[in-house]
Image (cartoon, helix red, strand yellow):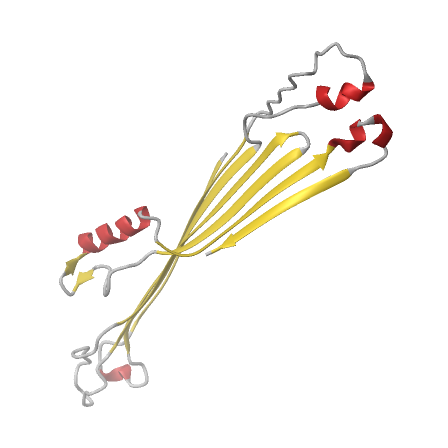
Amino acid sequence: NITLNLGYKEETRKGAEDNSIAGNAIESHLDQNYRGSANYSYNFKPISFTPFKKTKIKSKYFKIIKDINFSPIPNSLSVQGTLNRRYFRNQLYNSDFRFGDAPSIDGVTPNYEKSFTFDRRYNLRWNFAKSLTFTYAANANALVDEPLGNKEGENGITRDEYKDVLWKNIADMGRLKKFSQDMNLTYKIPINKIPAFNWITADTKVKVTYNW
């Protein structure tokens, strides 16, 4: 199964173009938010092998051997990627003007705020046997670096060059800032398959966690 989600939100404002800007020093304001996510999940058809199932030995003490089984493929797999981007540009007027003069942005540098994250999640479940279960989960959080300045091009970089740098950084999966993973292995000890201990159940579990 593949699931896609896309979202976009934009806020814009423009200041006055004459000397009525008193108390309103914003020439232009742009705030854009992008969000996109893709999720892939797959449940495999169960395959289980029991090599000793047809053994003709009738002894009840041999049941622990006859029930030995294993699965050569995972049970489920999922991968999710989420992109979140905010692009903010705010241009103020030059406050050094006289009444009656046309407003100007001369000498005033726009203010930029940019945030672009690329988060990924991975999950795997594999029942190696009916009594042996393995799960794996990982999370990766990365930043996608953007060039300085206006995305429409300025300061020696064109709009196309800006986009090329951005897409390259996305293709490189961003700059990894945090990575964590959890692995769990659970084993149901088949002691209850021995007639003398069929009233006993026992489990053991191993958990490994890694954070970077």
